[in-house]
Length: 302
Image (cartoon, rainbow, N blue to C red; front, side, top):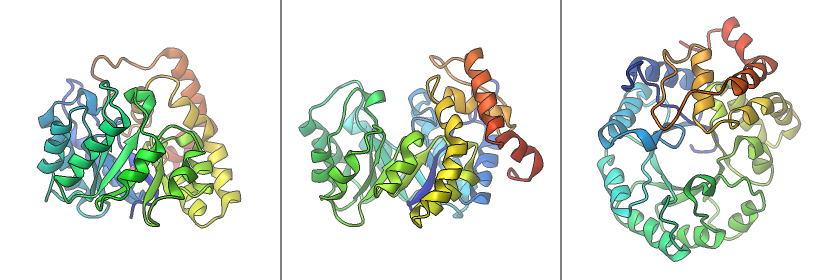
């Protein structure tokens, strides 16, 4: 269920900054249509840091509603407070989500023992499947493979989104965890290499606007057809790179708006609009990968 291309979906907003249900429904239908394996709702790309608790819950429930059982929804439930992460997780029990993505606590910079206790406490307070999320560039704290291995022994911790871009970590983790423990890339640029080394897929930013291509690339990679997978990835590489020239999700939201996937390119402070220079680079990348033409020529978006 969680192997292949999983999208870290953006949270579309109205011109006044409210959650835009119309655009969210359109995005969910796009991913169903293009065979994305699952949707992560209100992760980092979904602007979890700028949504209040009610909006956070509402957006996830709306995503579940629009999915209508046709695509699994993973809820972003991480927080830098253990009690808050537990509360977010428990509030979504019996909501229809298939699991939770729980980020390493940010700003606090806990020890490895603190990280273990944080995720252990969450796991012990719910039966929901938990996917760990390690992204030290965002959190200021790196969860080391030894801690992941120790956490993998807890029954409902089923995998990790590893977003360091460090490919050596795959086997450092994979060689010491149970066979079905998921190791998922959180970095589009290195995702194909990650899968070639034994990873299970990617939680992708690029998939927001290239769902069909990312789905096909991952499907080929998981069948060990890396020659054809790499042809797709090479075409997408300028997009992978351009989407992180400005802080995520600024570029991906601009691209989704440019492709008419969302009605408004609305961000909340402290996020600010995409710089003019990056607009030019990203526009060229979209054209180079035929993403703009593909949207003009077919019915990818219902």
